[in-house]
Amino acid sequence: MTIRAGDRLPDVKLTVMGKNGPEPVATKDYFAGRRVALFSVPGAYTPTCHKKHLPGFIAKADEIKSKGVDAVAVTAVNDIFALDAWVKESGGGDKIDALADGSATLAKALGLELDLTAPGLGVRGKRYAALIDDGVVKWINVEENSSEATVSTAEATLAHL
Image (cartoon, rainbow, N blue to C red; front, side, top):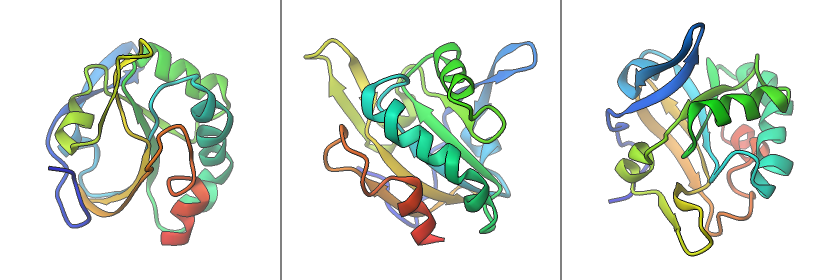
């Protein structure tokens, strides 16, 4: 079953980069009591993700937060070292939280896994953007084609706020 507006996020473990290295974080804890603009990319440094999706959210993060959003976060089926480095090297270290879904646990629990084994990329997460309010999905836009970023962009996110 694919997650929809009105559904509560499943409680799974993701990984964040803490002061002393990787730290597990439960979705129930990360999203509790706040509004988070969450976007998912198939992979750090992949073409659309690197050239369009992440840069758009970095550029619009402050504007998104000015609309009553507490945090902007990216998730991807990557290890936290790659995801965190990508966000920081792209200039988003102080604007975007990196939530690594290294084993596609969240992607699978949401019904948004993407099988890219044929080109050698393994199972990834589909490209989407969502607003999560205290753990509940308020809206979600999933790309039909995960190599494009149209309905899941920062601009599309702002249109919902």
